[in-house]
Length: 133
Image (cartoon, rainbow, N blue to C red; front, side, top):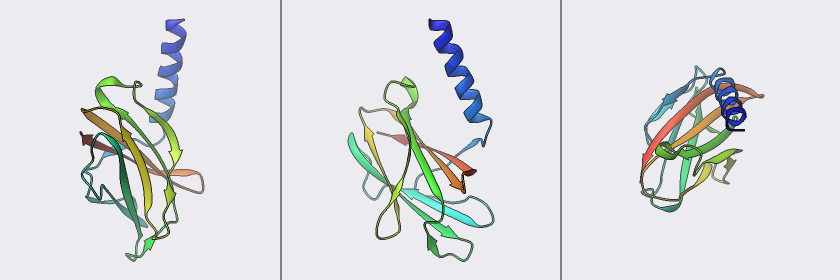
């Protein structure tokens, strides 16, 4: 049973990582996705145990704030992979044009937030954001 679970997890991990490799991004830094888009992911308030919200701003090549892309978010505690993880889900936008990603930090430690940017179902970019609580 353990072997089946391990092999399934390994196949899924390899399948996910075969698409677009994640680039480590610092929260608050403006990051280029491609020639058409850039983004900044930041916490408006210092992240803490419990719920915090990551705010993502997306800009087009002309510097105009847009909501053209689908962003899929997930997170996990780095030292306890799988124990406090959240399955990937689509991040919704606010009326002000920000993508808002609620994150529940269950305990102190190092966490990783993963953002997958998609356009018409195609992955454009994957960001890994380390967070210390």
